[in-house]
Image (cartoon, rainbow, N blue to C red; front, top):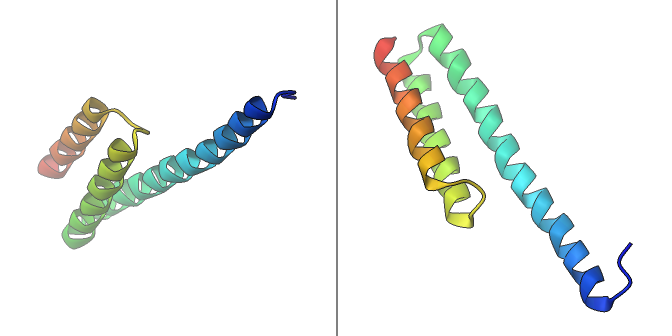
Length: 86
């Protein structure tokens, strides 16, 4: 446990940031699973909506500094290729 006042503050800030980052990543994984399920179901409208949702979530995560820009580009490219194949 931290003894200095500033160290205690940083500990609290770290826990808060960790909680927010975890929420973003959980939301991303959930929508990724929805995307995969809709892709298997061959529902074109659902696939497009879930792709847009994933794009939005990733962009927000990059903006907040949770994910890197290249990771977002690579993931979206991979997902769009999956859409084209099906």
